[in-house]
Length: 251
Ligand code: PEP
Image 1 (cartoon, helix red, strand yellow):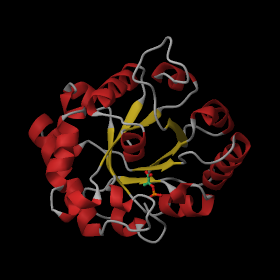
Image 2 (cartoon, protein in one colour):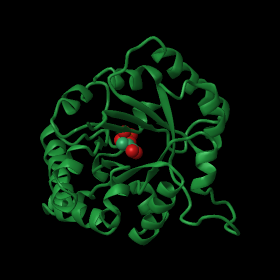
Image 3 (cartoon, helix red, strand yellow):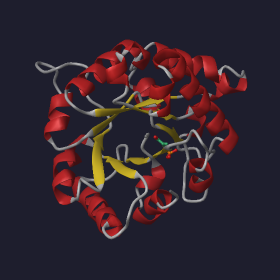
């Protein structure tokens, strides 16, 4: 059975102290709740170790937002998958469109990152999604299929089963423009169908696929009610406890 997941992506926000406060407030707000989804918070690297110690990680799992494509060594400023894992984090967001666009992450680099994350026992939340020009020319399915073909579709079936996919149309990220429920469902259903073609129905049915892009307390219930939408990757709305909790409660 695939999991429902609500994952926050804090991006480059919050000092260590502010981040700890946010994580502890969320932990307290969820303490007595029976949750119907897995909750994950994607913090900056420097928060990972402190946040995992400060919260109940059985209730809220912690994620990095990136990791290096190198195992270890002379790569100044990089953080390896093994280092991420050693903080107590369980997930890592990989292939976010901001990293592809601003840091030139190619499919080749992402292949190495996914492999290292998996080898170190992290669950990748693998992001894909098209730009507005692609959507406007109706090329979104081919574009997303190509992104998956070049990266996670190269994995063995056993490795593929360990990851989570997040579809995030670039035109909806941080813009306040959400994909319509139909657009999101249509794409997630398409992604599930190409997983089925590649790895079989059983794997497709058991893969958690999230929607991301201006998901908020108002639109979450309708999105999460769709048959192929297993949750959300949440940017802006994960920075306020009340907003993030309302999205979690949409399940
Ligand atoms: C994101 O960056 O992953 C994201 C979905 O951002 P937002 O929710 O702010 O659109």
